[in-house]
Length: 168
Image (cartoon, helix red, strand yellow):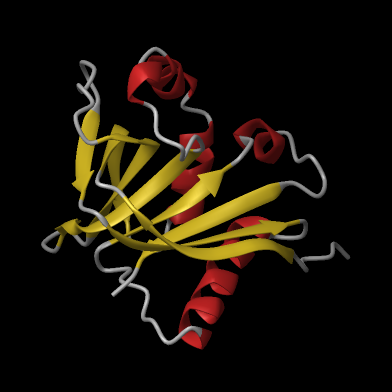
């Protein structure tokens, strides 16, 4: 039986932004983020295009899959998932890509290693946020963070995954 236990590598609450999250958006049924994250990790063309915008890079260098509730399609119950990166607020958007402007604010960041780090990092983040007396503003935006998305794709043992969430 596979060990699904993960260990928390890092947790912090920091003031960030403003950002422009640049990438490629897709709509998927709510609750199918794992399927989308696998797709996001395979989006090499998106990350290669963002590599070419290095002058707009932020200190948040990781590839990510962002979920934002303000783009929720209530009629069809579809959520907007965007594979991309947190870039500077004035980043030009490459052709065939999308963006989401994120205002300055507080963000909880959590990184987990090993086990089912993809889902455990978000659960760990929520637990730590509540311990700190905050509520995760997941209706605003949250993100799964891939410090090395190829480790996840290649099932490298003991890989690291992260989760971010806007706070209120």
